[in-house]
Length: 249
Image (cartoon, rainbow, N blue to C red; front, top):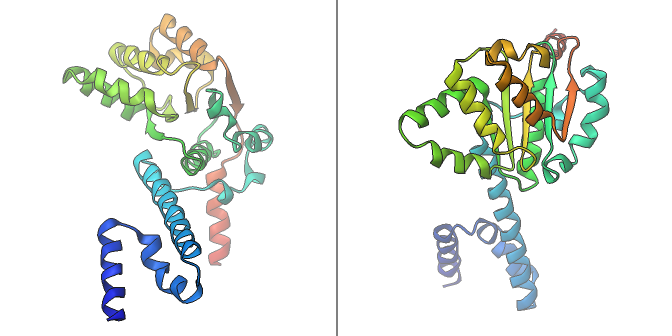
């Protein structure tokens, strides 16, 4: 009879998606003599499991191209300015304060790695995050505009606590793309955080926006209340490659 009840409890937990209780109720039955303590412990397991699932869901929905945790980054290979700033960024206070982070510098210096690391840390801290590239974001905005679904996208876009917009400067875009990007990034200005990575200094942004008025307005909006970090330096990616090669040898 007990075996049947145990199996039914497990099945009920599976149906109700109570993984914490499903995995621990048998061991707690053997250890607990007090029903209140027994129930408290099971609910604690379930709460921990629920939090874990929520974090996994936020990370999955953020659409990171790969996982890179801050703890995995070799900070000694980063440019000096980022080495000094990373501990502050890792506190997530910039999200609480609605500040932007703009990383500019030559390719391969760790800009995307750090962005993903900060994004995953934000997900683990309970924030809603979106990772996208600038070219993909502009393509999405244009499609939504042509399909008359732009307002729906904008409402969703505004709700993210952190948007990571990678690769500004790799591809130029037309007037429609520039205006759509400006409008949607402006919606978040001074309220919600954006991380932007770029290989271009501010004085070269006009090359991709193609309009000095939009360029100046974009720089003004994004740099207000922002951490501006110079990521010029040796290739972090190349150092990682050499390090992995040494391990194999």
